[in-house]
Picture 1 (cartoon, rainbow, N blue to C red):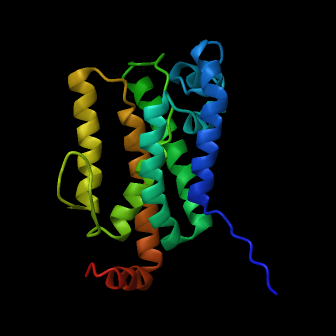
Picture 2 (cartoon, helix red, strand yellow):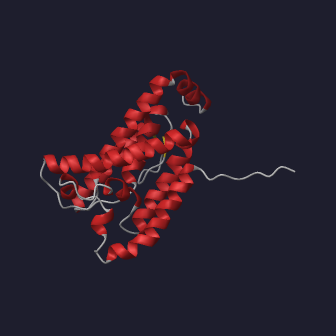
Picture 3 (tube, helix red, strand yellow):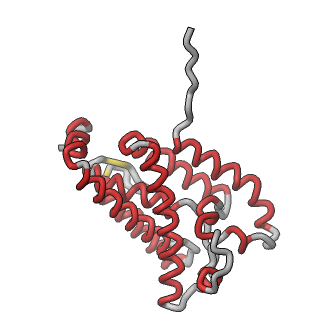
Length: 213
């Protein structure tokens, strides 16, 4: 008899890691003593301090609702994209997008001399990178986003999602890392265009198989 080992997808592993780290570290963050060792803070990065937070900030969240929304988005976007581009490319994209999100967050804070002491955490920068890549590879793919009751093409949904968050944070003063989201989205778009050019025929075939042509 043959024995088969079920391997978890990279998407599920990322969800598990994010969830476990949140459960382990969030109680410590509430004390305020460990925040700067995990969350990214522009003034620290500019001064060459706590550089590892460029990565660690991707795996921590500000609360359960923040974690839940991001992990739901990661599950739906990641499960789809990972099947298309494979586990290795998917993980590369996730980390490149997350790091790009952190770096743009720091860069724009420095350029405009605003929010230099703001702390940022969350996987949403990396997740926007996944959305950007999908938007390039399968732009006509229909998805649902709040609060629209009808599906929208992926490329439109990505723009609307970023715009809605930006407007919500401006109108209500919500602490949303919009520049980080933008950094992740740009990285995802660039990665998507790279794949679309390099694997042009495969991308065309993929869209035909999905009925998007």
